[in-house]
Image 1 (cartoon, rainbow, N blue to C red):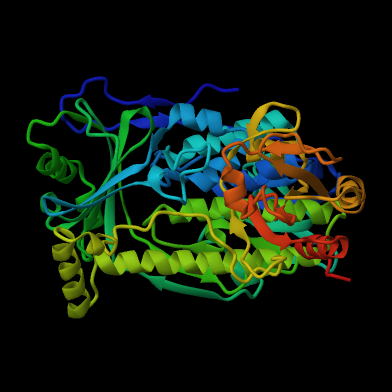
Image 2: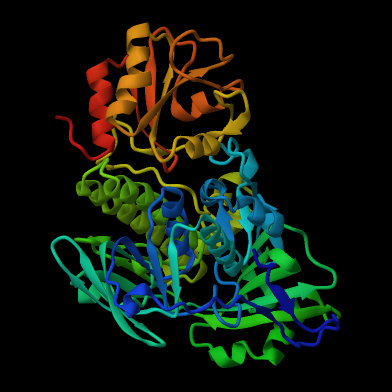
Length: 575
């Protein structure tokens, strides 16, 4: 495994803008077998070795699916080492724990849960995510800040370690030819052009992918006039390790500012610029220096690691599946960066799609199951876009009425707690409940479940993630309450024989006497997450999906009801 990337920068911290950069890995080009005349049929081709594509590839690796990843570059991140995405939400961290890179992220990144919001010089709002029910039960922290290229680096290392997926660097996709039972992918390399065949293609190549238009997939888009400038900075005397945001920063001409700590002692500072700002000028060393001294004082000692301007747009495809081609990450949706919803949304796309693709390719589910990816993740993308658009309008009011509303909220928030929830500097990423999921097996939506601690059937201390690692991609049925021996025996043997499902009994002490292996939930956290009661007079069964979403709870279930529910979650129908 390669060493972590090294930051190459001036060794002195004298306040002069000297700049620095990271030395990123360079991966070798390996001549594909197809260039040697071996035309192969692959189960999955992933276009793009960015955050979403690598997450999907790593997840498929663990499920034994030998995908091919095609990327036109030969490194991670962006050349120049812009920090890009930096905030990884608890839901993403739970997935990375299952994929086997969480420990590296936790060791390298910065964990945080406290955020503070200012208007002018006054603090108007603060929060601690650890105290909220949405984040208080998981074994992972609410957020870890880490430069995106580190996460991609760790994913590449893990994929190589697993040895299942074929990573092909400097392989640029030139076109697709869809067929009834496969897709032909045309690829250009430094030593020639070739074609390969695949059952499915997942486009993770970013927001400028030409494939949606080529396949006739419509797009809804809007450009936002906002302009921003990122400055990645190392300080001799760093600020507190908290997320600080300003709505009207006095040191930034009354515009918004974000302040986050990342790995290597590098602070990410996002400054909102005027809509007509000259982007070259606002990112020049002299202007960056003036801006930093206005915020941190004339004597501040710092080292500029990277600086760059950016603008953004919102964009969402009208469908995330076009036959055998699926779209994920920025290739499917683009949104403003407020609330860390972009990268985390792409990671959740990958998590949602991986288990479905695996079950289809393994013959355990029909291709129709893939339609649920669009049915679940496209509404999630639209929700995230709407949420970030509201932040944009709060930070950059488009009318006199919107500005009047914002000013009133800020004024009230200084004195009244009820108004503080209206201060919108970015609603932070949270996992989605799939309200209209075709896979829901009860009236409730498919709800996210936090990674709670448990005692596993073998007596070891673990959690839901380690349980999922043990069941090899299966659904998990968790039963609580009194259970007769006949139904317990069928859940233990007959159900797993017919479907990819593993069954467990939820207990407070592990003393239940029947055929189902026990999960000991001493603190009752899993029971609360699933809506189960271990002391109830009647039994209940919760179906947990491989992406840590509860597909539904069956009250007083009989065998036919359980089988119908499992078939629904697998896309098999209820017959």
